[in-house]
Amino acid sequence: MGKSVRRGYVPTDEKEFKGESLNKLYKASEDLLYLLNRGYKLKGASTFIGNHYILSERQRLALARGISKDNDLIIRKSKEVTNLNNINAVYIDGFNTIITLEVALSNSIIIKSLDGTIRDLAGLRGSYSIIDKTEIALNLIKGFL
Image (tube, rainbow, N blue to C red; front, side, top):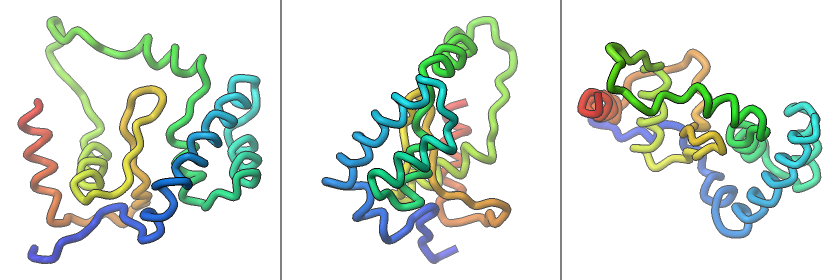
């Protein structure tokens, strides 16, 4: 496995997620959150905001994955396990954890969402294959657990 692969990388990321484009995304996220907290559905609100700010499809995806209305954040936080003292087993979505780690190890775009989770924009949809970062990702997970 000699070839280096950048999981989740798109050449336009350099332009769409830095500098003024990133500032525009932050403004768009504030507006999207405003609409979501007032009962608008994510699909319609993100389309409206994406059109208003003239965002690319990838930028719109980042917004949709990163923003959650306040009530959803409260519900997710209430389910968060913070004390592992009495926990005998931990179940994780290993496949998606591996993919997100591969994206991070590839220096591709990852997003820290409002709910504190880390998400990627890889969008593999059934096209997964092992890359040069896979073993490193598995060892990181193993070391953490």
